[in-house]
Figure 1 (cartoon, rainbow, N blue to C red):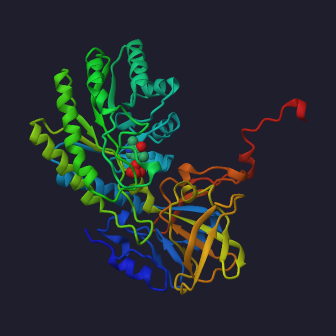
Figure 2: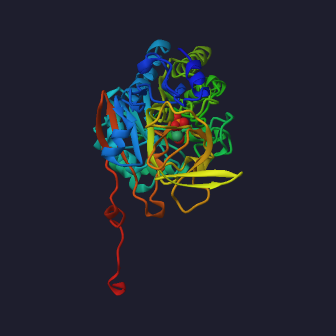
Figure 3: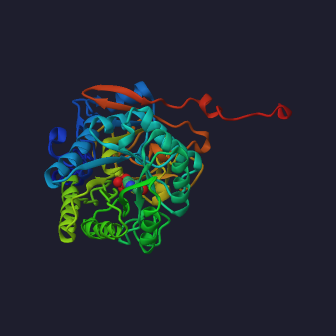
Length: 466
Ligand SMILES: *Cc1c(COP(=O)(O)O)cnc(C)c1O
């Protein structure tokens, strides 16, 4: 796989383009790019994504606007699947961790690319089934699924990734009542450390997710007496936005040992789900491994561990979210007001902020921006891109190196496909933006922009207050 020194060079130059190293990005791993693979610049010096001019898109669909590049999303899906075909001699299934961005169109694209869907709530489950995803390929996660959510899972017939004792017992009773076995996986905390933001580490032992590995024998013993719970396998998720390969290189051995332990209780586990977590390039300082390298690491680790323990190769699953959808999307904003504090800082405000991208305020995430209507303009200013919300921390990018910005410029922030729309809010009663899917010069609305009236939809004004 080609890495991206060329885009680093261009980023370091004055023109702020961050373009992929090769036109259409053939062979590039989307998670190593700062912009979607189709990003290009027109003769008028505008950015295009998926063949659509971002300035035209904002004129037609308004701002802020999520612009999702279908080619980049599909390419990432294909690279994951191709990696398993190349490096894993057994069966495999890639799941899209849809919490990164759960909506009908993205679930449908992932399914069309042969991926299953990982969901973490009744709402995400409903979205996946409504998008037409085959229930056999839906895996339902979550550390506190409600009885109603479990009932929905049983109704749909998806797999349930059981997180804890309460869920195990509740599900056992529900399965007995319905008289039909329920396919489950067990989520176990693998006890593997990795270096990422504290909030997005889940694999070390002090985590709210999954069974503690010390409990696993008790769980298998319980399951041996519960034939209505059909335990297919085990699941582990180490964390998110991970650049190291070692945690996943170590995971195969840890999980193979669980399979061996299960054998002692008469349980044959045939599925291993290694979770997601591959990082993406938000800035030129981020240097994640390619999708291909990550998949190879996972496959090699599982194959080696299974051979060492002389167990058959299980069906191998992984569930990337961020690395599938993150690099495929950019958000377009319009520039509004500015505040210059001489000698201190210039704030440039855009027409969105923490309501459409809560990651900077939540995780101190860093992004890159460029000016979609003046791609060639030299970056001569360091400014702070601020949102429009009533919160001092509503800053999208601190100290961004950009051209001099003017009101109505179209500012593009890259890498916004994951955990942006899915974490968006109506803070300050700001309507959530719409999203368009772009491909070969066509744009299709996949999420309608909220109207002001939508904000009142759930409000009730009691008679006594009228
Ligand atoms: C969040 C999550 C994922 C996806 O993580 P990414 O970093 O987006 O790839 C996969 N599995 C589980 C259980 C998760 O919680």
